Image (cartoon, rainbow, N blue to C red; front, side, top):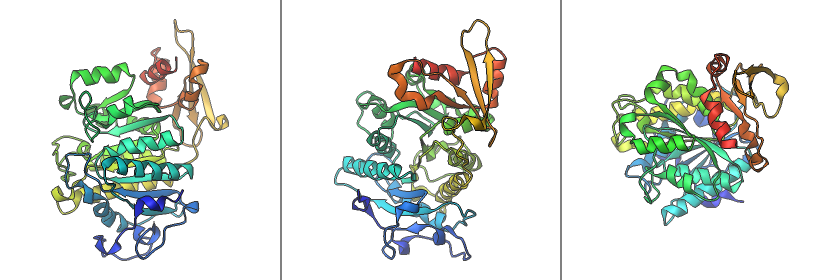
Length: 390
């Protein structure tokens, strides 16, 4: 498939790139699809950047200009890696209807995934996460989604697809290719009780902002378990990211978000990440766009440190720990990586019907989960996955 049909080149002259000069700036390293440069050869590309400047699926009018605004800051940063080939393949052409844009996003991302290229999306509205999800349906892969967001974006019954309801459309979409959803950083006063009950009944993972910030390292296995990470700028406190049409006095700090993005980059499972809802019209001297650019930089830094650390491919690189709980028939099995010291749990797939979920039986976890098992308690992560695989 020639995905250039759905893409328009970057206009380099309109980007506000820092005047700092020097070797190895990302502006010099990234293979760009621009009016001056031909479409990059994707055969040797590891990570592709695409912009989706469409605001019709969000109330956040003005976010359509974010892709080029972020690019201007990103291109001025320096590369410290010689093991990543990065391409910026331009912006998705806006369709006549928002559904046309979703279709283009789906087709472009699915083609990149088929070529084992990790995708970085600059939105636009967070409803683009729905189109990102459909790309995995195209390649027949059952996936996990993680979202850094102060709310769950479930919307109301039968609400049309937009940035406030995309998750409910993913849940109800048939055929369904969603195995698990994880929210990181929801703020309780923005979430109604019915939504919390629904998330619990679906065995999805929800993590309050205060808990996530108190133990930020515990967010690492959350993003390591995801195929898609979707970030709403509303998850960042307004003091650090003012370019948000819904200003939030509370949220993650810029430093914390950069750390979460580095965790995502280091995950061998994660294949796409989206940065959404930035509104340059409300930004202060480009502060939010600059933060998004630095978060992308940290994702790339994490990506450069990937170690092919996937237990389903090779058990020899892992130390196995068996824990027997009292009055519980099954042993809990933990794996610790010899390469990275990261932890996984193994949840057996016993039902033949659920063999399609086999890749999800290796559940990223932390040393805390292992300690929980040693204290004769079933870790919450293990129990939720076991319920889904029954």
